[in-house]
Length: 516
Image (cartoon, rainbow, N blue to C red):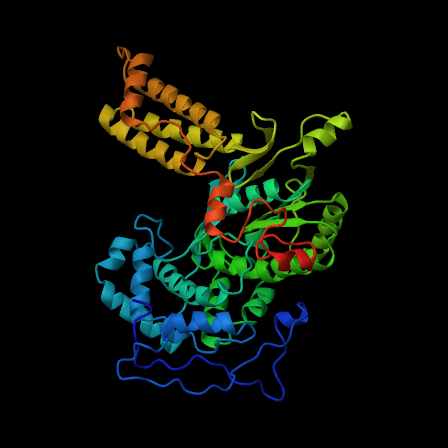
C-alpha cells in the first residue's frame, strides 16, 4: 500500500548546490566529495496508465542505488495514511504503553480518524512527540538495561519514517552490517562469521563491544550523519524531535542531551547510521589500505567481531579504532573487548608454546569454540551461552510456579510453545548437547511445579517423560550448516577459495578480488 500510485508524486531529485553551499556534515570527517543536491533532470513522461513510471518508495530505492552522492529533499510526502496504517498493524498488540497509557486496542477503536489527524499534524508541522517512558529490565550478567517506551502514535510515525529511510540507506550500508536490517537476521550474521573463520585465514579474533552505545550517541554528530543523505528539513526535524523528546522516570521529566532510547522504533536505524559513518566506512577503508593480511568483519548493532590473519594487524586495528571512536564520543568496553588466538591452527600453535586450549568468545547468544571433527579437521563449534541458558531457565521456573494450578494440558501447551521458540533460535548444528540439557532442566522444573500443587501429589519422573513426549519437541538441529546457507544466499561464494567475495570479506590484494 505504501507503494501505491499517487497522483501528486513528482520526481525525487535534488538541485545543484548553490555557489556558497552550507557547511558540510559528515564530509568534515569522512574525506569524500561534497554531497550533490537537486541535480537537473528531465521530467519523466507520464503515460495514461502510469504503470511504467517508478513512483513512491520504489523510485527512492532506484535513485539511492544509482546516485550514491545525492541528498533526498522530498521524502515526507511518502508518509501517507496507508503507510501509517501499515505501521500501526506492525506494532505489537500487547506492547507496553507509553506515557499516554494508550494501548493498541484503544487506538484502533477510531483508527481511521486517529491516523487522519496524525497525518495532518505531521504534514502541517504541528506534530510534537511525547517523552518516552523509561524503565529497566534485568540483564544476563545481573545488571539492568534501560529501555525507553515511546507513545503509540510516536511508534507508528517512527515505523513509517524508518520504512522511508530504509529505501535510501539499504543501498548505502555495507555487507558486513547485519543488525536490524530488512531481510537480515542474527543467524545471517552468525553464518557469515562462521564461514569467514572456517574458509579464510583467521588466526586471531578481536571481540569488540561499544560501552553504553545507545546512551552515548552524540546528537550533533547524528544529525550531521543523517544530513549527509537526507536533505528534507521536515524529516530532519522529526528525527531531532525524537532525540530531544526526553524521558519520564518516576513521574519526573528528564532531558535527553545524548543517546537514543532502546526500545524506540527509530533507534535501530539511527544506530546503524551512526555506526555506518563512524565505524563501517572507516573499517572498510582501513582493511583495504592498512592491513597486511586477511581481515573478516561482522557487525550486529554495537557487537562487532573482527578476524585477523596476523596479530600485528589486530593490535594496530584495536589502537586505531579506539582513537577513531573517541572522536564520536564512543569508547570500547574494557571488560568485553578482547583479542584472542582463535582459528584453524590456534590449537596447534598454543600446544607448541605449552599453552592450553584456545579461548572462546560470545556472539549473539552463542559461545564459539575451536573444535575438531571425527576426521581431525577444524570445526567451529557453537553452543548456547551459559548465562543465557541459566537466565531462561530461571524465568521459566518462576512462570511454571505461577501456572502450577493450571490443568496439565494447558501447562503442556504453554511449555511446548516456549521450548519450540527456544529451539527455533538455538537449534544449530554442534549445539545438541545444550538443547538436551535445556529440555532435561525443563522437565525437572515441570516435575517440581506439579509436586508443589499439593502434599498428596504423586507425579513421577516416568509421567513427566510421557508428558514431554506428548507436548514438548525433541532436541534436533533445525538450522543448516553455516556455509551451506551462506552459499545459497551468496551464490558467488566458492568454498574452494580462501578469500571470499570482496563485498563480504575481501581485505587482501585487489588482484584476488578481481579474479573472483
